[in-house]
Length: 177
Image (cartoon, rainbow, N blue to C red; front, top):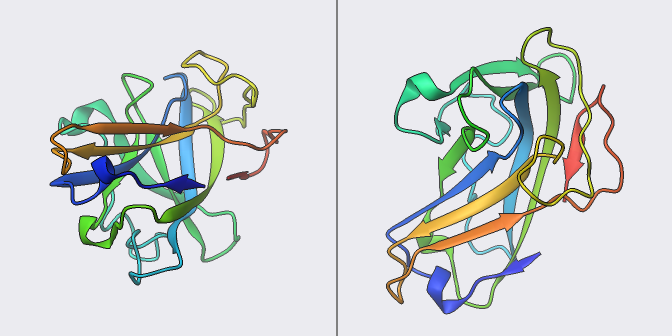
């Protein structure tokens, strides 16, 4: 859970990132939500389960050759979709979405949930990660980043959130909390 400070409120630009895995892995994200507690906007995340394909989702880099996005079977089975980030040239290349900054209120708490799966970029086999590694290494699990530009106090914000799960199943989607 995260509380918004005055610096994260009324930014000109806010987005959420899903990145941090080594480039030798494909990162798959599914069922993403960001909810206000209490909720004051309908959706901070548009198209959270990818029923509309990759609509509202972008690569974390303006150069689209640095990361590719494609649909992937989701955690819910048939008819469920996830979004795969692949052909990445750096660990911080991934999937993002701009958030509606009108929905942010100072002092409000947010809950961020998602499902992650890691695949070897070469052979597509599931891979594990070290849930205790909270640095940018070849062993850490994917993390979530919220970035705000030109915030109300004039500073940019960068919040990086690490997964609090104690285990990683290389063959399944793993909950991010």
